[in-house]
Image 1 (spheres, helix red, strand yellow):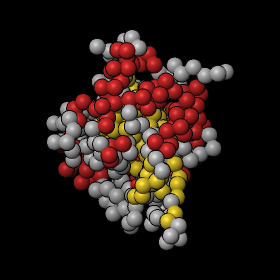
Image 2: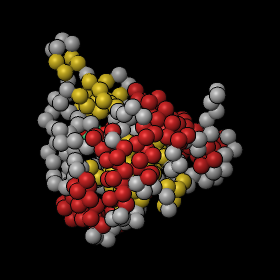
Image 3: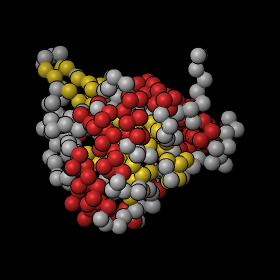
Image 4: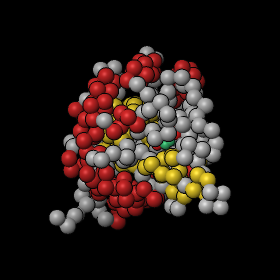
Length: 306
Ligand code: DHB
């Protein structure tokens, strides 16, 4: 049996297949649909300091080989999250990575302090500095290396758990932001969040998403994600979690070859919440067929022409 374990910082996961934030709720919604204990980890939906209704509809539209969403960080807020979700994480048998979003540094810090004040088996935090859809900001952090580094160091002082900064592709050079996150003390970066997009109904002559622009995800963005992961891998010394358009095990292997130590499945969960489980099986077969004894032997091993 090939060894699928992979490590991020001081944490080892049973396999490199995680489900992505915003595509698997708070991790507790699908117990009869999917055996979640077989995932490497679940990354939960972004939590903010206070509950949010999110943006008005339409907030999701299908596009060629993908979808655009502008949910606007609808969520229950950190207090209810700690009361009603966190205690259930003891039972589900899979590591939980909590995703946190905010608009100013103090907000991110307050959320982290509240979660850290209770005992939980959350193994780490993924920090959303790249939400494209809220007026109050969020993406400002993800496009500014100084803000990214300052936020990361403030959070680093507050937790010993995994600290993962989720990067936006909507920047001139993603390596600069990844480097800032690592300088601030991040254990890892995840790349990429959604790509700015717009969809127009020509008959109605109207933009389809209420907020006009939204975040594009799905197979349409896989080449963007692969390029970002490969660039960060070659420039910054930290484990990378690859995200963007992963639908099957071949996609997942491509991300490992580009430099990812783990991957997240996002949009594919909407069609099949068990997509991640097929990816785990497919990775196992790939390793057996190619006589790879440990999945991590593939990380960054793509051959380029230079
Ligand atoms: C939302 C947040 C994101 O980080 C993203 O990439 C897309 C959408 C949201 O809640 O609107």
